[in-house]
Length: 171
Ligand code: HEC
Image (tube, rainbow, N blue to C red):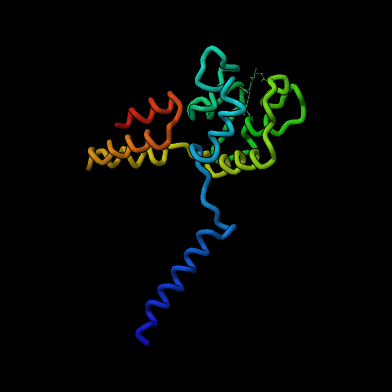
């Protein structure tokens, strides 16, 4: 009888574990871990930090630019892949529309990569904003810890220069 509660606890834990890993409830995708590598390899050469090479004045490494309304379209509409011009461009078979442009020599996105981008947009196109908000709140009550988190973040994530700057501003 004395074993009962711990058995119950073990059962509850394994049930929770099964829920967490069940394919029905996958963990949300994250820009830094899941999406950045795809865009950085195929898109940043023309839509990234280098102003000299930037095309169509579009930056896909900066949320403000990627989600801005431009000529009646948004590259990314968080939560709405169908309205996102980015997805139309990477899915198109029209050589004049498709991104990356066929003549750039960059590989088109694979079906799997396209699914990742679609899911990430559908889930709200998370960048580092959520964590950003947490650190800002923590700064008010415990600035030393907030600063330590920002430093750890920079050390572990190794983001590109612009993102480093944005993250470092949180210190
Ligand atoms: C070799 C350079 C190059 C690469 C690489 C590239 N693009 Fe582009 N992109 C362009 C040019 C040039 C335009 C403007 C002409 C046009 O709209 O087709 C453009 C336009 C766009 C637009 C439309 C912008 C608007 O304001 O309507 C989107 C969205 C876009 N690109 C997304 C992407 C994505 C996503 C990738 C990577 C998968 C990518 N591009 C890779 C050169 C590039």
